Image 1 (cartoon, helix red, strand yellow):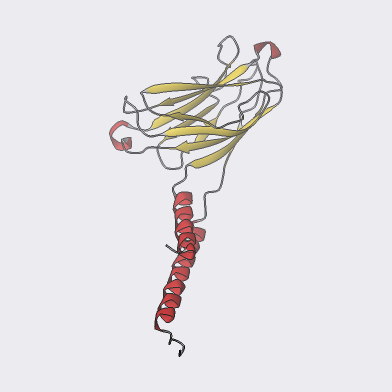
Image 2 (image 1 turned 60 degrees about the vertical axis):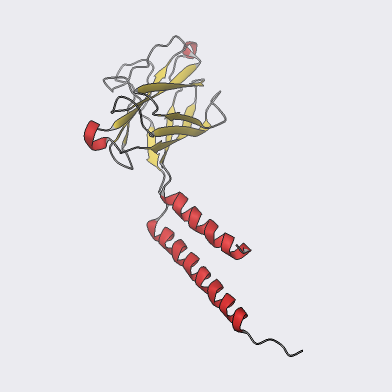
Length: 207
């Protein structure tokens, strides 16, 4: 394979990779109202498989911006009925991170959606109370390739007091852009073929 052919193949792979990437959400919330005596707090990330045994769904938190948060991506895969991942942080400022959801819709019609719930625990493993009946701060049902992420803050008079996290879905790669990329790859490949054909039929110089 020539160098130019490798470039074309790489562009195809990039386009396919972007089309199949999980959905990314930016999440941010203010913890200035949290009781410092509860530090360190933890994000309790729970993933539940509706089929009761697990599947290929996963969730990843990365690009953290908060005190004492991890510096590497944290991933949880739906390998059993229910599993949790605990991510420590020190409250007092803004907690921000990127949330990537990769739903597995294989058993959706038979068993219903998998689900993500993110809650907050203090250092004594007490749940921080929110307006959600199960004290979730974030909740998403994996009922589509692009699930809706619901956010919850503290109830009136709650302790600590905090607003529901801001959740913003990162725009997915534009379909038109992917089509243009694919068309460009095909054009380059066609030109390479034509160039190769002319090279093969070009007259040889006289000896």
